[in-house]
Length: 170
Image (cartoon, rainbow, N blue to C red; front, top):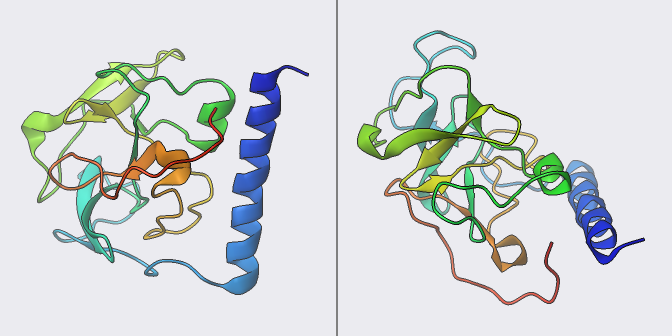
């Protein structure tokens, strides 16, 4: 088994373990973020692609369903460096049409890029955006600082948190 495969399996195992621990302990971040504006019903046509929510980390970006959005420090510009197994744990935040900005989101910073699968991945302030499979409910921020390369995105479009050292990468 190649090193990349072994590391990818380890990452998936860690993510699954994190989900199991959260489910067993009931620990999580705030149950649901407070949106920067009125909430629309899930799937509503006027629901923004990206909005701002208030969490214990401050004002962060979330998708239309309230799930935390992350940036990956290994991305270069609007080009995603997360593919294959990485994207199974960190799915790209995608839209089918032009993205829409909710209150507190700078519409000029919100764009898309075409991923390897030809879907439109959200980009904010030059950073491709992702969700995390271990975040099973709105408001969870389980990926913050993961491996020193994954960070929650502030309303300004920057990473939240400090760069941490980690011996493992994928």
